[in-house]
Image (cartoon, rainbow, N blue to C red; front, side, top):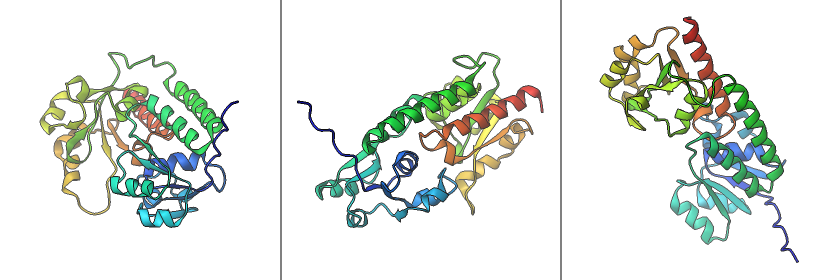
Length: 266
């Protein structure tokens, strides 16, 4: 006799921005009762208006326990003490790792589907993701060709991302070569001198936060400004890039538009 199928959780709390997004996309009506306060921030959250319909939490074990959830979804690097305390209190916690590739976007969607008992909805979302990704990639082949424009991701403190990262795969899916990766740089700080030497066709910087930040000043350096002509500029919208969700498709579309502007010489 087959074992009984576990009942889907009825009261789910998310305490991580990326699990917030996936849970809001996949949960049944009324199943997700709370999301983290970061989900309200439109600079990093793709669905702040939808998040506002839920109870907002500060990812503290005491407040989560008071909501009597039967499942908590969290990030792999969510505060370890919080996760440990919730488990000691008898609450199931499912943790989701950071996404490093487009394949892992599919894996996280499937993982959330299993956690919520919404496997069919997750399968449908993955199928739609694959269809939309294939449409964006159409005519570009499996990887950008040798004549494809070269892009450099350049954010606060001069950080960049290599090919083996979600950001790197977003560039490749848009038909762009990763100039720092070709120069031997993976994830980490890219010296300004190297950025100037590799002469990318496109410099992709991050959206600024309100107020002043010394970490962001490097993005205003004359070298960066000189590389960023009208066609050779783009800005990362963190809400589309930061989490492994179907919203990465919007980031790919934005980068593909930037590539077309370069190719057209606009």
